[in-house]
Length: 338
Image (cartoon, rainbow, N blue to C red; front, side, top):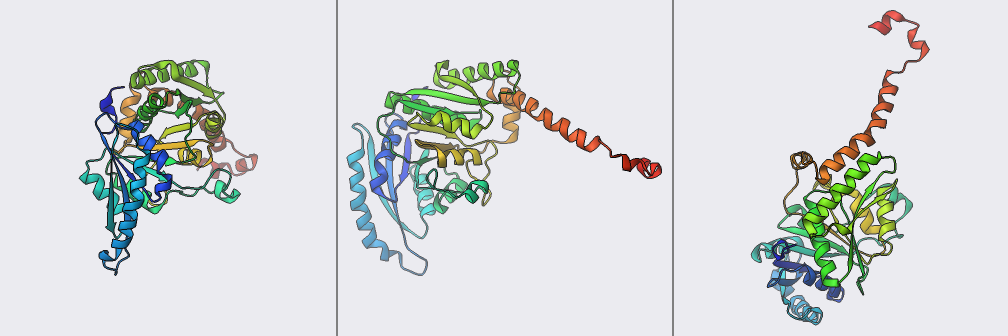
């Protein structure tokens, strides 16, 4: 992995500087040599109130942000900025544009694992804050959201992938984190136990190519069988300290939709370790995946082969249901023919 694939400018919005240590550590691990991190605090002033009314809170925010400098690794440039505005998301997007940021790194205080009700688990609800949601929809640059559960000594990083631009970004970041933390990296793909051996072999081959292409070392590629993809990832994450995932291909930016995809956000909620979910600035289209699936050794080609076989039983079941008649339907042959 070349240094040029990493962000040169990272913006870290901070609502609570006391939770900044891990975010700064992650940001420093992802930063390109010679790059800079900007720690940002937004002071929101309601409509109808003069912006100057936020001056006192801005001074307090500046003092708090100075504490962030304690967490900065040697050799990393970090500056602090306080903005006063009506809405936090607008201030973040504006600063990202001014700094020509490559990455915005958010901390996320979403629901912890095991704390959601049964109803919430059955009826998935979006879990990001309004500020994060709006910035993601604006897409000023690549986005990473960190569900923080503490990062101490990191010995293993897990990167579940299925292919696509989001997965490539996640793998680049996971590789950089593994290098910085001197940790092992497992790049995971989950397949159904019911897949034919030839398709499983294809997935394993293509995963190796994918990992080699983006990390330079295919040895971290790992194919695991599992009936439930989410639960399999959670089981694999149990002895990792960091999980890095890209948004799913079906993730959309419409109001109320899971912005990183339901599977990814569920893993972020439920996994024991810190989870980093990422999304590229550019929106992958269906045409992107169709084009990549034409490459025999791509992850998209392997996914397409696996999906075609997984969908066959459903197609057969649907055909049987639509094509089977009850004997009573033959009582009026004329009507049946019509």
